[in-house]
Image (cartoon, rainbow, N blue to C red; front, side, top):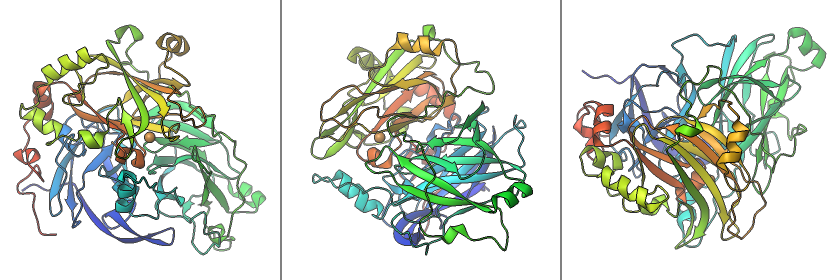
Length: 547
Ligand code: C2O
Ligand code: CU
């Protein structure tokens, strides 16, 4: 009989982080949940149980392409029915060849991913081009005092109430609130041994925070991976990482002699949030274990490292792929440019719109992918309307249809704000496959200028890149920055593209693309269990159980 390879059980319960109790959604009882290790090119079946009493859940394998199993992408009402309480869902997860690297999984419902997250590493089929002795996962998440329901209700209320700012950036679920300077709450420690090379896998699993981080008194980081692809080595003193992004860096640890000289076996690991009304600095510790060392983990108010003031000047790493891109489409191959204007607006409540729409109010009655599979979503007609609309968006189905083998340029264009809300960073994340990040900048996207700038270079494929805020806040609607992706449409399915800030997602900043048509989706999915097509469906048998 069928046996899943991994089991994830989602519960909601009181849980302590940063020495604070909070009612949180957890995976297998902890936040982060268990680390998953999958193999490049190999299928793993992951069963997700919803053990909560009153909330739906879905689980998304962030950054993986879901090319072989679009029904397993974990997006509620886009790729699947949400998993109702007392139901489970069997996800077929097969990391695409060429996608070995660092990922994570998280709930795709409401604000749950603030705690319902875990790391996911895709082990390569081929040996890594970089040598290192050991690796450490450093998963960054945010602590919010309000519960998910309080945050969601506040954001969706006609009397808008902000979630509040993050209380701390946590490392592997641990940390101390910036406001709790007493040292009573222990900092997270990353344990290392002297004289070794470590691959640090940074995972931006924050709800909101854009983090600039560095380690006290250590060599610069050498970036070797971005979003699941090896890069040429790139040195940086500070690593900047948004929610949704991942980077691997190599870190050489100090030798025994250097530790003697430094007269310390613990070093601060500083995490500073940027682009918010106030800069928040929290800490962790890089530790070379020793029974006699002073314990920095409990020292009150560590001294901040000198950190560059980069609030309005972003480190947009010009990374190059380690392995040459063979499928990077040239400008001449681009068949369509889709400009997605984003801005804040106030209707019945404050919303973030993508091309004039709020995902929360465009929610379909049944999942797009289910309709498409059953022949109830006429994509040919939708495509026709999208072509006529001039901006690639079909107002009727409220999605962006695209045909297999088209080459798209997707441009996120920040239009600023009404209500003085607007000019913030938006880390945009694309499902379905990775996108070539062809750049970002201030003002309006200019394809001719950008092509000059690219000048034959090959960018790295990413799944998350940041539409930076280049200007101070203003009440005017004015173009204030762009981020552009180029992609050849493959991987039939229904894919979300959205800002990865959870608050912004709740406020509507999400869009759906449909790649291919019914035939392509059926070919891509192979034969599926009918369970995927019904509420609470699973691939194998009856999905209900008694939690
Ligand atoms: Cu990590 Cu659609 O999200
Ligand atoms: Cu955003």
